[in-house]
Image (cartoon, rainbow, N blue to C red; front, side, top):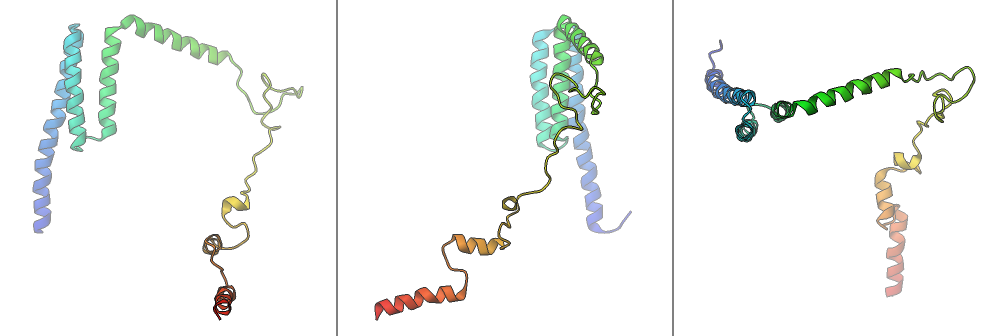
Length: 182
């Protein structure tokens, strides 16, 4: 281990922070276990209260940056889905049946191969074969590039501001003013 003061201090700080973070993470796991027990015992009101406390705890830990906010969101969502699946088992089983029927229907549909059929007809319900589709142009128009006349952006700014761009044009108005005054 290094002997620099700053390295030793950082090591001390890391050990205390690690212990503190572990205790917060342990609290989250404990709260999850309490929710699981309440679900098993079919205590709906207790589950709701525990879930509110769990969300508060997870958000607090995420705000301290002990866990990432996406990790916190994922934890809350998984617990919520677990609560919902336990509270309505009949609905969960019907959604699984719908999903399986959707998969079997999708399996029956022929996949588009991207090649035109031998008869030369469109593949399915008015679709044009991939080989026959017109390709989008990759060229960018000059106005999108910002160089329509080949001038730089600074010269365009000068033109739009109403000021003349060349020194000769700049002198001409001054001379005209001088002649008017005389």
